[in-house]
Length: 404
Ligand code: HEM
Image 1 (tube, rainbow, N blue to C red):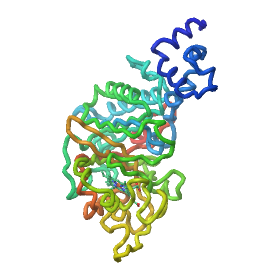
Image 2: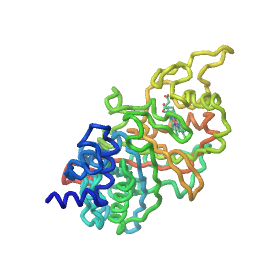
Image 3: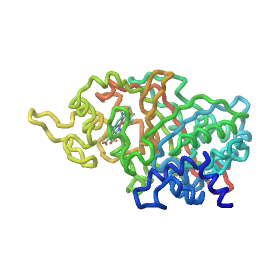
Image 4: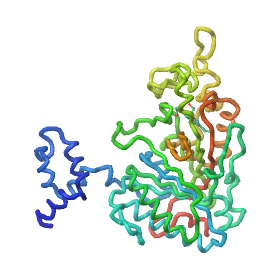
């Protein structure tokens, strides 16, 4: 490429964003002099090197699907598809093959085979595509006996006000990346590829803070302002594998996915003062520390009593109720915030992964259903359960284990 062409490219729209980033990121004396004209001296590769968020990739192939233990990306789009009546075993095989191929390309920054906008694939931004199966898909491929016992709608809970339009589904696409355009493009490609055999049942977009807005590793905040995700399973924990990964049959190396779309009444929450908010959770909103501790990761002391003889962390608080007899977490939580202007609501897309829904998620939800003061301001309005098969090697497709 001639210097002139390179210069034109850099000054044209194609690299304007990245060039801006270079300048914004340079303090005086850094980079190549720190003036606007110097960004034109960088090669496209160098410019991209200054756009680490866009260029980062997460491997698609492997023992487990990506998007489960991946550090949560800033944006997610959850899409549930319903199989057409005449979509049978062979059509599902073709569908999963196409989706796996699309995902393998897109996540590595390449356009999909039938991509009409491959340019949009060029910033993968840690894109992951995670596929999940509803009971009907499993049944059509491998018969009723292949459906895990926990793969069914959750038991009804008193707190639920579930809406059909946010619940259920035959095939889940969990698409997540640190760039919103990347997510939109991947979603468009994957839904287009599925169109012959499925229809869209629901779509639920979610978000966290943009990458770079705060230090890596910072626990997310939900829209109540709370630090959310402190006590969680972490890869490397002693019992992580046993709690998260299924061990048997076609699901070995896979996991289960529970989505609870939980509306949060932000207007009512506005009326609640700081100390009542902290009591409702059992932790301080300011820093996420338990009411008996100083730092976010201090172990809460549920036995500690205040001056009037009552527990410092109220027994009705969310963290007291969420924790069972055994303090070890039983699920990997990976939530996203949501706002839905059309529905006039905002809240949390509560997402949990566990080897078995009935032992990982349900007992916790039952305790919260019986009593959790936070229920005053939160209402589950959508619910879905999917089986996430293991990952696949190159040339294979996700879900292939179901066909053997
Ligand atoms: C909108 C609804 C919800 C909000 C706003 C919320 C918020 C929070 C917050 C702020 C914490 C404390 C920080 C942390 O350890 O993560 C927490 C802890 C927790 N939540 Fe929730 N949560 C909600 C729903 C749920 C649901 C549906 C479940 C499962 C059924 C759940 C299970 C847990 C668990 C297991 C903990 C850790 C408790 C412990 O300390 O052992 N939460 N939640």
